[in-house]
Image 1 (cartoon, chains in turn orange, blue):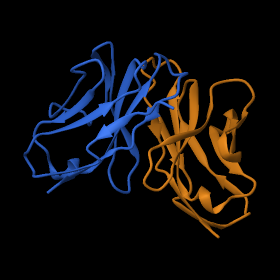
Image 2 (cartoon, chains in turn blue, red):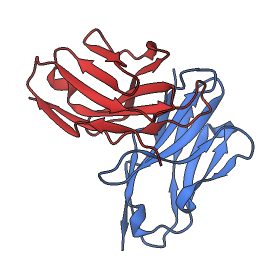
Image 3 (cartoon, rainbow over the protein chains, first blue to last red):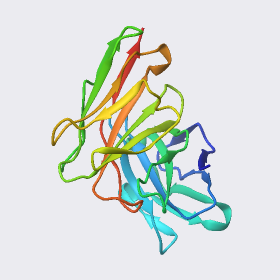
Image 4 (tube, rainbow over the protein chains, first blue to last red):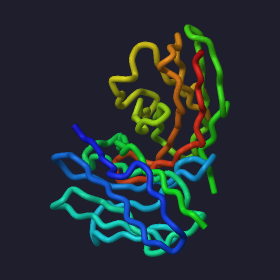
Amino acid sequence: AQSVSQHNHHVILSEAASLELGCNYSYGGTVNLFWYVQYPGQHLQLLLKYFSGDPLVKGIKGFEAEFIKSKFSFNLRKPSVQWSDTAEYFCAVNARDNQGGKLIFGQGTELSVKP
Amino acid sequence: EPEVTQTPSHQVTQMGQEVILRCVPISNHLYFYWYRQILGQKVEFLVSFYNNEISEKSEIFDDQFSVERPDGSNFTLKIRSTKLEDSAMYFCASKIMTGGYYEQYFGPGTRLTVT
C-alpha cells in the first residue's frame, strides 16, 4: 500500500532562514508527487508537482523540490522564507497507473515563520 | 480563476442525524473526490467519482456514506447516520481529466462537528 511520511510536525524559523521539509513515500510502482500548501483559513493549493523529467522542480513563491528516486524522497526547499510562508505543508503522491489518481497525503508540516 | 466551492463552511449536527455536504466542482472537470481530515491527522481519501459512478473508495467509505451528482454542477457527500468520529474537515476536489497526471483542485472544506 502507498504511504507518505513527513518528518517534521512543526517547524519554526525566522525570516530569511532556509527551509527544507522532508517527505518520503512508500510505493512499488511509479508515482507522481505533489506539495500542497494550506494558508490559515484557506483551501489546499498546489505548490508544485513532479511527473517526469528534471527531478528538480520549481513551484510558486520561490519553492522547489527535488525527487530522489533512490531515496523515495521529495523534499521541499526554499532558500529564504518570509513571514507570509506561515502555513501547513502537505506532501502527496498518486500512483501513475491509477486512473482515478487518488492522492495519498503525508501528515503535514506546520511552518511558523517569525518576523 | 475557477474555484471549487463548498457549502456549508461549518455544519454542526447531532449523532445519528443525516448530513449532506455540498460541493460545486470546476465546471469543465470530469473527476471528483472527497477527502477528510480529522483534527490533528492526515488528509485521507474517501471516494472518487467519474462518469456518474464511484470509481474508487477507501475503507472509510462504508455504507453510511454516499455520493451523488444530482445535476450538472453539484457533487454531494451524504452521511446517513453521523457518529462522533465523523467529526472532521471534509474537502471536495476536482480534476479535469482521468489519469494521475492532472492536478486536483481543492475546495475550502466543510468542518463537520458531530455532538
